[in-house]
Image (cartoon, rainbow, N blue to C red):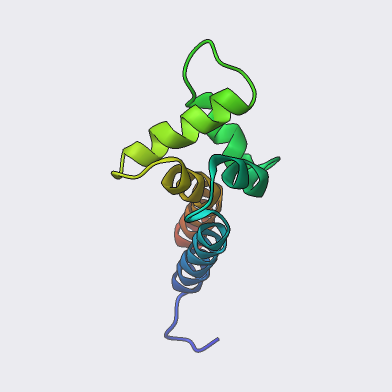
Length: 108
């Protein structure tokens, strides 16, 4: 790595690319799909677990996940598919932000 490129810049760039890749991969699987397609594409993922936390109270399982994805997606004017993309990309973005912060913290 050249001396003029900081490790935190590399970490941030790699994290941004990974986040965009995850979002694009999820989008290709869920955009235009039915609720069943979206649920099968996201089953067992961290995004589905995040969505179930945001789901409507009193619901469980698929109902909690789908209502959570719809609620998260509605924050950007979308629906369940937008929520699926956001919840899939969120964990990758968090790890990238932590890596960037650690590199920045220990940089000279």
